[in-house]
Length: 158
Image (cartoon, rainbow, N blue to C red):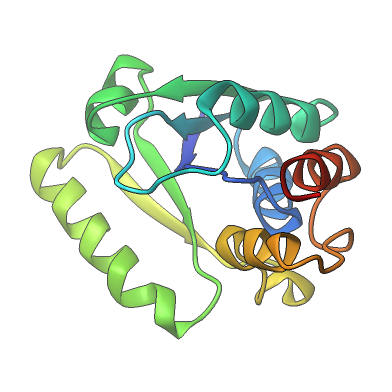
């Protein structure tokens, strides 16, 4: 079975993430959305909330499973018997960091490849951090996230 893992904090999952997950589901039989439990970031939503939102957003996409992971991504990928990591590239500014991550992962696990996908043009400017900031400041983020995610943001930020 052709599988891919799409890791991230998904704090929160955005329409850009959903676009990449949907498109990956057309390329792979199994898409594992891996929600990071260990992160240097201070997430707005706890792990269970992030998992719940991702599961809700991905519920109608065939072949997608949403799971939590901790530790090294390459270790998790091997445990899941997955040999492809998918990462999204929105802009040139993402490339340097993602290129570095891919290189480090390749050094640790040469049997695992990294695949980069770019989101549809209407999602290239969306990031979880910008969505959170706009929501925190009272802005409307309904066009950037699914309705249940929007409701969670409104509950969190008022």
